[in-house]
Each structure stands twice: as structure tokens, then as C-alpha cells.
Length: 153
Image 1 (cartoon, helix red, strand yellow):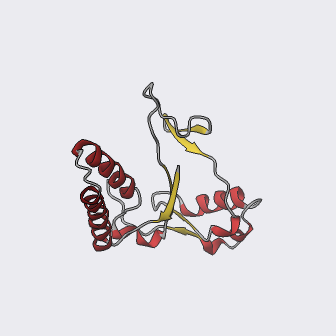
Image 2 (image 1 turned 135 degrees about the vertical axis):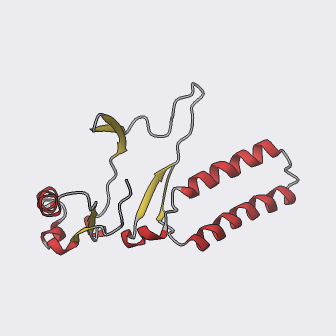
């Protein structure tokens, strides 16, 4: 299944969310006398791992990211079964990166932020050419920005 949400950047809010999920699992176990610890803990760990995909450090808050996460599951033969029919790959620096094409409203894309390690003017022009057909709002190049998040090497 696909889960979508805004990213949570605030550390206190992240901890509050994790505590809430743990409390819900505890309440469920007590209410239904479900003390199969391996089963309950396994589901809890899966849920927390999935939540973690929606947490980022506060320094990234300027991104105002909205993320789509595909919750994978393993088939009986040990392969991922959730997206194998639609998963595609692109190559970057010798690494094959999986992706899934999803349709969304062009109006929902408000700005594009790029890495400060890229040549800003050259990349901005490339993005304008790439988006001109389906994302007319990017004719206004003020919507294409360079991230000011500090790089770490």
C-alpha cells in the first residue's frame, strides 16, 4: 500500500508520535489479551520503521516535503511483492535506483529546491526545460531555488 504524509521535522513531535504508537500497541495487547510478544513486537517494529520514513532533522524544514512511501511486503519466495509490476529503475553513477511512476496534479508542485552542490544557473535552466510542458508554473524561475541546507562531506 502507499502511505502519504507531510514530513515531521520537529523532534518533540516525532517522539510524541512514537510514544503514541507504542501506547496504542500496549493498549491493544492488554485489551485483547494478546501477549504473543514476537508477533506484537514485530508489528510494532514494522510500524515504527514506516513512521521513520516521515521523520527528518529540523534543518531540512525549509523543504516542506510531502512524501509517498510504498509499504513493501515479502512474498513467500522472499521477493518484494508490493510493487514488482510497476517498479522501474534509473541509473545514476553506476547505481540502479528503483522508482515508481505516480500521477499527481501539476498544481500541487509549488517549488523545486536543488542541492547547493549543483551549478545553480545551469541546473535551473535544465529544470525549466524539463518542466515547461507539464508544469507551466516553473516559467517563473523564482520557484526554482537552491537549498541553503549546509552540506556535510
